Structure formats: C-alpha cells, structure tokens
Length: 291
Image (cartoon, rainbow, N blue to C red):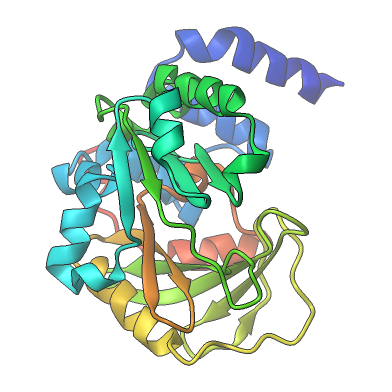
C-alpha cells in the first residue's frame, strides 16, 4: 500500500518538480528498494545513472537517434547490417499508410519502447495506428525518463522491413553489454511479443545466473552460427564508449543492427542477485573525482 502511494506521488507530482538527480534518486529507490549511491557509484545500475547524469558526449546523442545512428553503423560496420528502411515520415497519415507494404515495423526516432510490429496491415485499424504514432510524436521522452540523449531529436517515424525467421517469428533479441569496446556479457530475449523469457551468457557462452525482470528460458538453447560475428560487430560498434549496450538481431541470413542503448533500463533495472550487479559495476571504471 505504501509503495503504491509513493509511486502515485512520484509519477503524479514529484517527477515534475524534481531535478534530474532528485528524479534518479527517487525512482531508483522506488524501483530497486535501495538508495542510489552516486559518490561514488558501485553497482552497474548506479554507474549507469551516474553516466546519465554526467556524461554529455555528443556521440551518445548521435547513436540514440534512430536515423542518425544508421550512418554511424554504416561507417563502422557496413550498410549490410542495417535493416532495410522503407521510409522516414514526419507523421503517419492515411496516404502514408496506404503506401506501406503488408508487413513492417514502425519506430519513433526520439525515444525507446515506441515500436509497433505490423504483421498484416489489413488486420490493423489505421485510425488506431495514426493516433498511436501521434501520441509518440507528442511525447518528450527526454522529459519522461530524464535521458538527455533524446532531447530535441527529430520526432519522426521510421518504417523498417519486418525481420522474420523461417518459422515466421520475430527473431530473438541479442543484447551485448560492452565495456571499453569489448563484449563481456550478452542477453537473449525470447518471444518478446508472447511468453517473454530472458537468459544471460558470458563471452565464452556460459549461462550466467543473473536476472533482470523476466524469468530464464530453461529450454535447450542452440546458438546461431553467426554469434561470433555478432560479438565482433558489437565490439566494433562500442569502441570509444566506456559502456554501451549494442542490440542486434541474428537470422540465418546475417547479423542485423537493432539499436545502441546508452542507459539500459534507464539505470533502474538492476541485475539480481545484487552481488552480480556489483560484479558488473566493477567492470566500468569511472572518474567521479570531479563530482
């Protein structure tokens, strides 16, 4: 009951009045039940919050831009890793809807989580899609989550080709946790739009006993043949960042770029057990002396 009341106060009143640091401290406490240490931060989730508050590298803003990051990926890794782009639109109109193919994915350029997978547009309500994308465009994601990298990005809508496996499913997400240009850990998200499960593995492909939100997948996992290629690609894309999560899709055809995530879970989704969050935190060396 108390947690429910505090959440309502935070989202209804406090977040509108709080500074970025106050917002981070309050939301971290509400989400994890722990005090957010920033001087110095210890766990990975605490260090992600420190980065969010203190690292203002322009390169982080570039890779947060879903449109701008495409050139970044093409330059570093080659355009063959980019999911084919159908179009970039100021807004989705009835004319745009009619011009789109039967299957595609819509993504907002200026934030996270604003994604719509369309498997058959003939089964969708275009009015509902138009309203949804209008709501995306009206959302200041940098204000909602206090992630500065999204501030003032163009509020356009991207339409990309829909990737599907041979079985007609959306491919599993592979998310690579990179420190100083090298993948140390990766997660696999299975069946994101159904019975979502999540596993973690180290670079040697050993299963790691760690969890963020979703339960593990206990079925036998067969790694794709191009996993090593994906590890190399994640390393290459994360060069120049002390920490970055690189999100990729692996199909039999090739390794596809998904996105680069500066602040996974906005720093509020901590690993459990706590000791693992602390272990991962030791991999990220920050100079906090000036803070």
